[in-house]
Image (cartoon, rainbow, N blue to C red; front, top):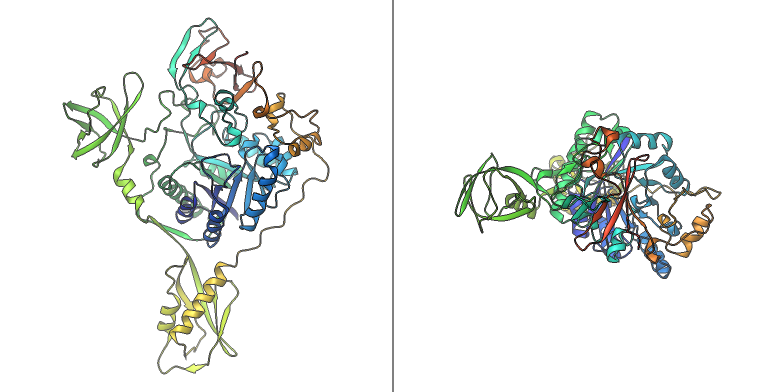
Length: 601
């Protein structure tokens, strides 16, 4: 039986508990420092509380410590790792190889640039139990990694925002704004507007979001990913709010359950419990920039969102008629006072407005948009009714269990499933009337616990009177015993006995070496004269800032290799910001990759 894990994000303790309630098998959360989302830090006490809550259901908690670490921070980082181990965290995600001695199971963050079987095999040799694969990989590439390295867990992203550069190899934010993506401070360079200019200075595209991608959605392709060898399915979003976590987690949980229902002899969930929802999950109603399955089946058109990096939401109809203070909509969507709608105007700019009053399909905006025209497509990026549902308790997670009550030599014992039985000392007092119904009623009062029970087994001929207070005490002890009976984690595995050569990077700073321990690690694995990370370098010359599978040649229809037209421009092309800064592009057709450089000084 393959155990399938739905891995949900947690900005904070509230989001983490909501993820558990709505069907996550594991939660990933950032600590107070050193996580790749600096704005989503949490105290060790909050993480400990999340572990206690999650572990009731067998849900695991992983903590991201996946930034590069400077020398002055090594001591504090190791102290943090020790505190996380004491808090009962299940694993830690890291990028920096100076942290391989962490006292916790290790997962290789996607920040370690994991896109080949060779890289995954190398990470496995270092003791990593799991590798988070690059988002850009196809089903075929994932399957080949699993075929070559079958003894490592593969985690794949299935939903959420996409980075245009291979993770861990983006230095544009650091170069332009002094904010390192490898330090959790990305300034979202890829969501900015650019001109695309050729070698003669001709503007090919003017002021468009040329590096901004749509959001990932693999909800229709989970079974393909499972068959390829992935076991953990990750939802992006450690900066997102609790409503996003609730809705998206519930949606994917139901999708996984449907797959398991079709293949009950092959798959099972990695945690315990069943969820009941008070709403119908819908990915269209949560934050998204439009959806793509990215490179799941190879290179396809339509992965980028050139017009806007903002959330457009669900399509709700077209503008039918305009009046001075209202509009009518052609479509079947229902609207509510307070809905947020948006549209792309004639200049390809996203505009939004708030609905003040609704009368059927006629909407009265708070302020009528001047650029709205009949025939324009409308999108809803804020659904008042849906958000109202999610502000209330929207899910309950319970584990169905069975109980067995037995007599002992000096009292009674109660067992839940296969957990160790608990017992009390009490007289065997014969009952004057049948006790079965009262015993079942008392033992199944499980409100406030993560359990539900509809069956209590009693020995044949059981006819003893047990006071309700003693039944309640037995129930409390048995629930405590069951909820604390988590299987012990497997022992830590030793890394390879001899240093293994590190994968080669032609550009030295791509190793992201930011401290002395990391430098010694790479030196022991064949990297001659390890060079410091980009963040520690003085800017010089034409530096590689991004490696992207997204390609503007292809996106604009000028990739001859994939059936496009012959380019009408003279290369090299450059991306140009509004302030005049230029970023030359290199099209590496051998590797089907676009590289973005800083302009030579």
